[in-house]
Length: 88
Image: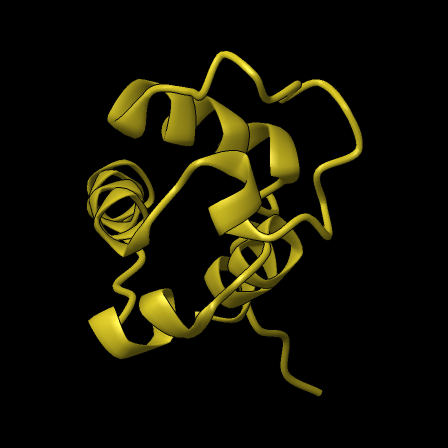
């Protein structure tokens, strides 16, 4: 019987994404980021592809997770972005 050492990494959450989005790209004052934004479109939240790429760069530095530009720009909601980070 063999045992493998596993490293547990905390899952990337919506709160993590909101924190990084706000620090990397700011926020549209008309958007309630504390509301139910999980399935809101990034465009409705005031974020364009450049903001998402900046967010991905911060995630890469903070979490060591590499995300392709194509994958990042294909994601349209916070739920999708969180799932992308957690699957990387």
